[in-house]
Image (tube, rainbow, N blue to C red):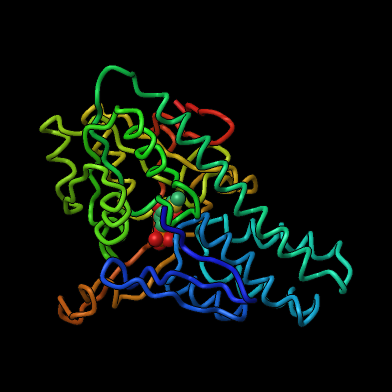
Length: 324
Ligand code: MRU
């Protein structure tokens, strides 16, 4: 399974997801600032993956002492606002750093970063098994997913894509559909790349085709990941998730969110409090680097919030939550 990064020789090597699937280029990061830039520019993306990358960013700051680690923590936390996994991982590493002496700061931060990654890998495994268990044996299912909630977004087998992988292993998947996920095409470029590499039967659609596919009865369930989940179980995910949830509800198709503990924000009561990142107009005015629209005003929220009443179930590593 492809990994989004590897850490060795005091360097975090990030697989530059902006270039996929055309090029597999590894970006060497030797400072927390470089890791923050890679997160901001989406060279590495996906809620759990940016949390893990930030943890290694702090390891890179450690040789300069705790004051520099604290400064790096601020820069890394600000790199992207919506996925809570980022600030969660940074806070957890900072707590570990404050208890370590200056002498073993680097070693302690490395241990914590490795532990966070290993826990996400285990969480992915548990969610995949629990999620696949929601589907009856003896028949096969067509699943629609959005954006990329796979290995490259998590460092493990994936959240939503992890469930798809497990369904395939268990002979319960007839086909995975992924939408393109405009404007940055994480579905077309990254999910298609992952599923294709694993030999999982998959079909690419444009974002606007999802409703018609449901109307034709070709989707048995929608399964997506999440970037932040409020206490009332409203869930933020890549923009377009809300539309899919409304469409699924209108067609009687179950809508599942798959997300680890690190995506739950205990400080936020409802989805209305989730900060939604707005990105550059250029992402919408262009298509893969070429201008595709005149210079008009653009609204480019990177995420939206699925209200809990539209979520059939949330699959976590600890069990299944049914908000309804
Ligand atoms: O802007 P991105 O590509 O980081 O957005 C990613 C998503 O919205 C994913 O669906 C989410 O992080 C879940 S990843 C397991």
